[in-house]
Amino acid sequence: MTRLLGTPDTLNPLPPVGADFIDAIERSRLMGRGGAAFPVAAKWRAVAQRSRGNAVIVVNGAEAEPQSKKDRVLMSERPNLVLDGAFIAARVLRARNVILYIGERHDVARNAMLRALSVRSEPERRMVTVSAAPARYVAGAEAAAIHFLNEGIATPTNVPPYPFERGVGGAPTLVQNVETLAHVALLARTGETPRTVLVTLAGGIKKPGVLEVDAQTTIGEAVLRTGGATEAPRAILIGGYFGHWVEPEQAWDLALEAESMRRHGLGLGCGVVGLLPVSRCPVCETAAIMRYLAGESSAQCGPCFFGLRALADACTRIAQRGSNPEDLTRMQRWAVEVRTRGACRHPDGAAMFLSSSLQVFAQEFASHRAHNLGRTA
Ligand SMILES: Cc1cc2nc3c(=O)[nH]c(=O)nc-3n(C[C@H](O)[C@H](O)[C@H](O)COP(=O)(O)O)c2cc1C
Ligand code: SF4
Image (cartoon, rainbow, N blue to C red; front, side, top):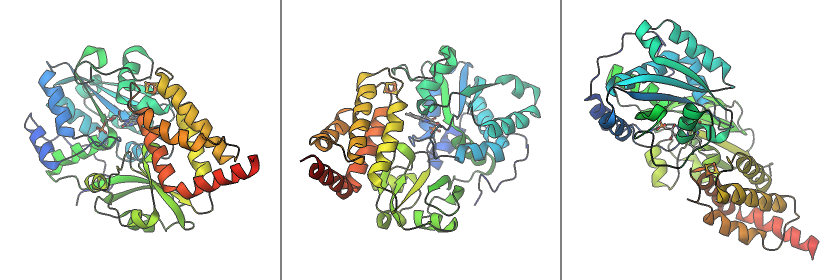
């Protein structure tokens, strides 16, 4: 099996690819690795249909998710593979420009990409510009990336128009995660269906970091490969801050594959698997993440800005055992009400995370509340 990190990062001539390469992507069932797991072929077709030789490829290496490291590791260790994927996309979609949109704090990754680019052919180099993505959670969202590249403001705007309709400079634009593009490059080179996934193991783990595993690998096997957990986990957060908490017994046997996750009503998101040790308070952890997410709202949509702040405040009051009698029921209601009420998926992701916390940590939330009532009665 060909691996991203197992493949030497050599500079090879690009494999010959034409419009029919999109069929190969479709057969491979490759899905985006930036978070939404959207089918890659459908996105490429939408851009190909509109491109008049003017399409733009945005290589998304923003990676602002606090626990995620996999995009940085990939850009640092296999920059040529990422560039190959971008140039293949440019060729197939008849693009004029490739933009490397890399997190402003990811210096090692950006320098590795620039070094790899510096030895590319003159026509390839001329196509590429590099842009520093602001270190804000929403800056990696594709609508925010387009807004930033057009107007210098990394906040999402209302869709439509979608990037494939009118993106950078008004041209049809493909925004694609760096890992997705690296898989495209391997597919073009080997014809093999991508079967691996990059995951970041974080939290209560002996050797936290990035692993490339076969997508059939279970979470339990991946954790063992890093030397195991530091102590028994209370729950596992799958998919980063827009993800779901899962009880360890259920998570242990789950395969790290998007489709199997989906069958369980879960998602691998950006590939973060975070272990919460039993010694940590899940209510405090939930409150801290909610405060972070509320602070990362771009403050353009009322339900997102005010709603997430109210949710974070209520959660913090419960965590600190100073809540009002209605906080818990209100939180349950608001976590449903803020969904789909913003211009981007930020409130949906945050609300989904909170709902899973309320479900998986129901006992801990109830005991915090009981303790509160005892004190305030
Ligand atoms: C708030 C928010 C933040 C996001 N951050 C990133 C990011 O840092 N990197 C990324 O590749 N995708 C991120 N995404 C997903 C992008 O919007 C987009 O779906 C992705 O870049 C498309 O590439 P893919 O199809 O290859 O996954 C984010 C989405 C949202 C809603
Ligand atoms: S939903 Fe939130 S993060 Fe998204 S555009 Fe509106 S205010 Fe900004």
